[in-house]
Length: 286
Image 1 (cartoon, rainbow, N blue to C red):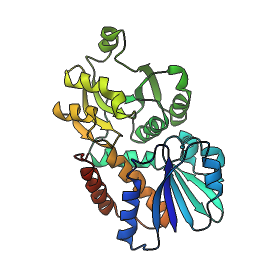
Image 2: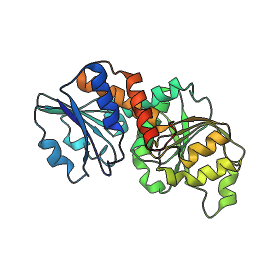
Image 3: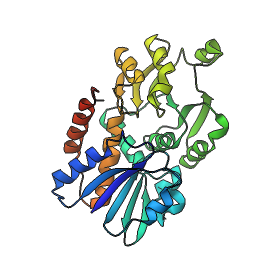
Image 4: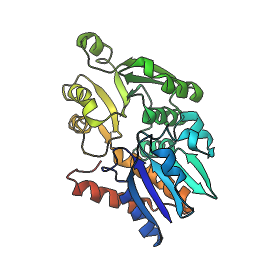
């Protein structure tokens, strides 16, 4: 059986490492998993071309929303967050799932980071939408979301509304009015700072952490390559608990393995393979 991760760009993805490690541990010698470069325009034709030897697909940016009209069926969670990162192919149908949400819950829970206090999310895209749904399942009732364009945050606000969670939008900063922007954050200790943006995009927040102008009990950066990000490094130096993106990738992939193979995922074998791959790329691991 065949499976793959699709996205653009896709060359950095560690998903093949994790899934292949899972297949080896499970003794699934006839299974393969590859990375395929695919953008939104190419997704319909690629999906239509897959035969009965395909078990499923993992989806990363920019395909998590683009795939929705191409699905034959979707679990309720996909409708809730308006994003699918997993397609299971069976009997000629494409079935959509979202494993980012349970993956995020597991990553936070296993790190002992159930947030009891203010939460700041950086970014308003598909991963931020999954974060909103995950945090609501952990009992969070309100989040602050830093976005560059409030007018484009409609999908995130809709997810928050469906989840029964209040989302307050603030400017992604620090910006031109640095002092005014900073005044809203200086005296607040965030229970969780969760970044869903590319590593370099969060560099301003890393500088604030390093300067002692921003404080968080836990910093969760969903980026895993390159690692550590500037945000994660600054948080670690400041003594805050850090959760790396590899943990999210691991746990969402574990659920994908279960969905595609029907077998429980060998999480520790997958983690070991992922850590080895990060180390080989020159990162220290999350």
